[in-house]
Image (cartoon, rainbow, N blue to C red; front, side, top):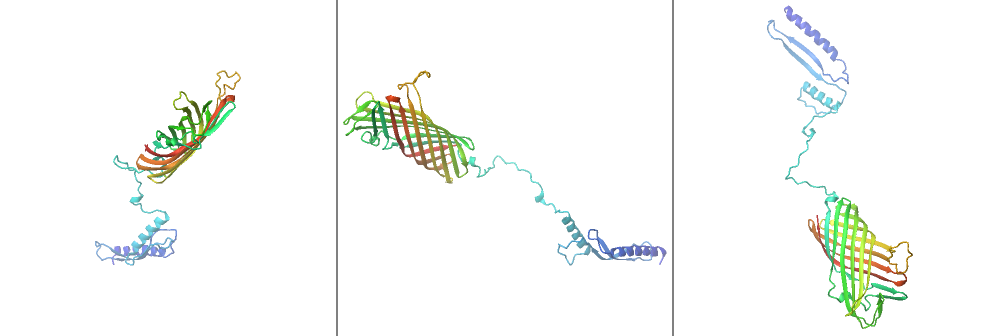
Length: 389
């Protein structure tokens, strides 16, 4: 063996000997370095120009102090096993995972002009009309026990209209009454509400075994009596939607009602008539509900009440003592009930049926000169048509 070959063999033997000594020690669990144990064999020919061939025999070990969590392949080389385990432990120690396509942030997509936007069904304001006009044909009739009271000085008289004095049901001219209702939404929970109607009832019949007087005018048995009553009402209110979901709406009303009633009696063929006019504006409160079990069907109801007593005087001089001829005190109270069902035929259009009853009491007091009063109810079924936007 020549000298160069001998020196090369000696150097490799020294290096691998030191490595064997170091690798033979226990590995530090906190150290993730790859350590190789084995032996090196150097075989070279005597020709100096020939390449050296080095053969490494042994196995690679990685010890990080953690249990194995991967499946070993018996056909996998030691180096590949060590590499796969090192990668897995690196991801576990640093709480990382490979970034895939789903981890990339998504950019917001612009909605095209031809695409349909679906509104959340829980958005209540999208389910109810913000403008609704309802027209009802009301078959309104005066209650049979409607009472009239008249006093002139010390002369007093109280009677009921249906007791031989008036029969409004027999008159063919007493048709239905148109009732107009309008609701305008100002906010998700606030709407304006208005209602108006005017009804006229007439009756002509012969008094039988009955005498009475009204407004200092008397009527005797056998007279052909013409009775006429006209009632006008207008309501304006703010409706607060205390509850408003896609299937339920509960409203509270705060407003006022104007009500005018004109009552007159006259003999057939005679000039002039005994008349009284009751007219007053009263504050009003109320509640209402609408239940929608299915999209096209609604059940609703409202109740409104109001009362006011007004002490007035015809005198223009407030410093002058008020005499009996100046007194004109007025009183109005009412209760209105309305309930029914509605059918939404299409978007913004539908029909309904229901019952409306309004009980009222109106009075005028003139001091020692007298007073008049009417107390009764107006009610009946109705059919309605509504449009909404």
